[in-house]
Picture 1 (cartoon, rainbow, N blue to C red):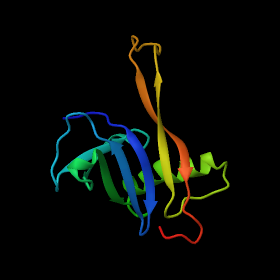
Picture 2: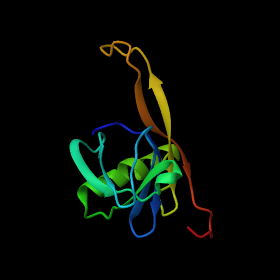
Picture 3: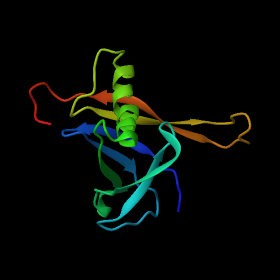
Length: 138
C-alpha cells in the first residue's frame, strides 16, 4: 500500500550512514524485521528502495538507517538532498555536513493552489540544523 509520510529529521552518522526519522502514520503496524520502500521526489519520482525499519513498534515513530557512501548513486544523492544541501543552505554556505549533523524538517500547508481544487498540499522543508558539539561524542 502506498502512502505519504512526514520526514521529521535526517541525521548524518559515522561510516556514511544516514538516520531518517518519520512520523508514524496512524494505523501503521509493523514488527521487528519489517521493511518499507521509500521514494524521494527530489531524487527520482519513480525510483523506490526497500530499507529495514530500525525503530521498535512501540516508539511511535519510524526510523531507517541507510548506508550512503558516494559510490551508491541513489543513496548518496538522498544524503546530499536531505542533509548536505540543507546544511549548506541554512548556514548560508558557512558549514558542511559532518557526522552528528541533524536536519529537522518543518511541515507547511499550502491551500487552494491552482488546479488542486482546494486540496491541502504538504511539504517537508528543511527548517533547522543541529551541529555536533565540538569535542563531543557523536
